[in-house]
Length: 363
Picture 1 (cartoon, rainbow, N blue to C red):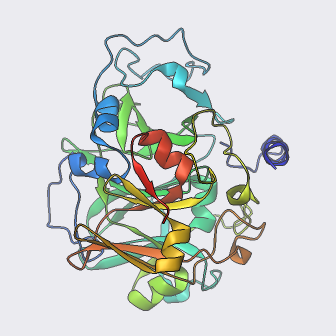
Picture 2 (picture 1 turned 90 degrees about the vertical axis):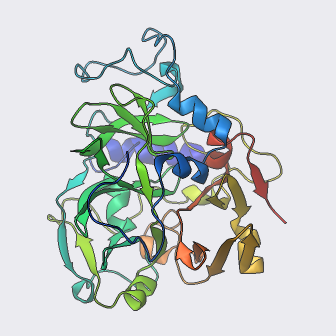
Picture 3 (picture 1 turned 180 degrees about the vertical axis):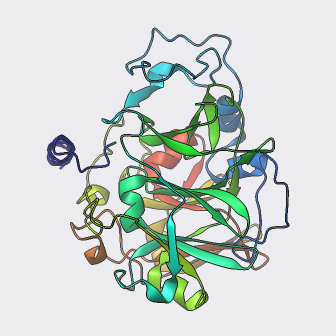
């Protein structure tokens, strides 16, 4: 399966159509009816304290000789500041901005979106009374959307190889950052960069790993990954993103067909957790992970004040060729005191890679 996927990715890349691979200021923000998460607290989504320290502590020396990636396009990046070794970063195929972000996206009322099917997955967020959805049928080809919602500049991000969906506040030290793709991966996860300083950022943790902002953390917002139908029911007056050039990419087609039923991750050579298939889905919050299979069985789990609930009705974005035909993997909400908090539905190898001492609860 991995050989087939590799061949598919390289062929599609060759024809030019594949996406290969601070503190808040201003108005009070209500995110998903719930919490904002400070940079320090956001680390707990994916990291134990030890792992968080690894990615926020500058190394004494950054050895650019020990690397497999080209630095020719990165003259503005300060490679004297890093929190990870450069030999941990590999090329995903395209170069800088080879997977183009969407900046200042076109927005329409949700009830005018005719292309989306009810069970398609979308990333959703509500800020200051405004609710919006970003369909994965678009993000799977662009990975980053620089947007603004409720007066707050945000980056909506999706790493297909990790199925990691994270939304960040783009403000840091009073400056608004704009994000793009480096074309590189670390632990199979998207490495982003900001266009203001060309610092590199780990998408899964929201931490700067190379450059001026190395060691800094973005604020994670409490978004949801849910079906288009569920978003529309919760927010009948909501809005959604649509592409400015709808025929620029084959939107609706999944270029990673069969990936989430593969036997091993793509472009990953790290350890995998024991007793569970590396590409099984897990729900991650607070430094712990729960098997999605367990959630499908239990439907609801309560842990130290956090409530995790699963319901059917959302399709996998990484299963069949047509994204809308993917198998039903369901959707999850994670709340505390009735308010949304950040969480991830990712693969267990990703959780293990970034939280090696973290617990995966399987039964």
